[in-house]
Length: 300
Image (cartoon, rainbow, N blue to C red; front, side):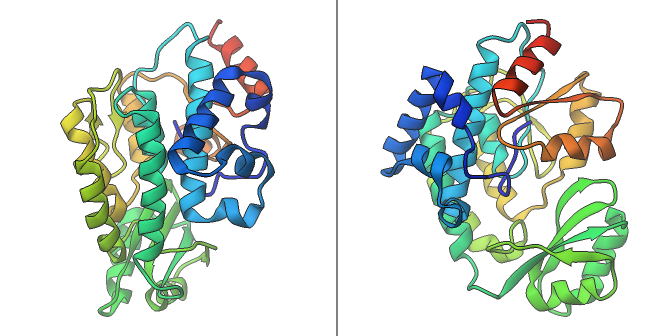
């Protein structure tokens, strides 16, 4: 499973770049694709530049793909399925062999720009809502929309759902629910991002996808996607659709997955597993120590 935006941090990928020629080569490929030094930005910042949506997305994808390839070339097992949180869905598709790495880097850079440009600053907001289940929160959002947009954006885990929409509507929901505003640059995964979805439709139509070596679980509807033609429409839909992460993970477990590996910087997704299904162990690969520990757990 591959993390999404928010997992970026200055220093991400530093140990991999220091110890593995493969990591340095992938950083170089990403930098060539973007036209700027992504490795420098990941390793040294500055943080405010790394956090910009159009920089954070290719940075997270690149470090995730580095971590995955270092794991895959040493692991004695292959994944039954893959999934990524929002942006991470692109990392999963690359890992599954369905999209070329350089194409993905360029695409998520543009995706970040489109998402940022879809709404003027201050128009949208996002908030984490605690302790409410999905149906009740969806009903509350409908009541408080009042002609504006507000809806669940991330179903992260039971009792942990993020909403997105017009800032005033988000505040109206917060007045009736326990939660807090998030520091984000745009209202992701709601109808306000439809302009970004239309621009992504054009970009994705130009890319060459392949069939996946293992199915990728889609954020929007938790379908197991493996055929090349299925990826572009799913990636367009996920721009405005909520990320159904908890049910997607449960679908993977229902498909026979008995352990999950978070591949890329951070351990946010592994933390969510404590709420989704404590019985399924969550490993991680984000640095040398975690890579070695995960390989040992897999019997390498």
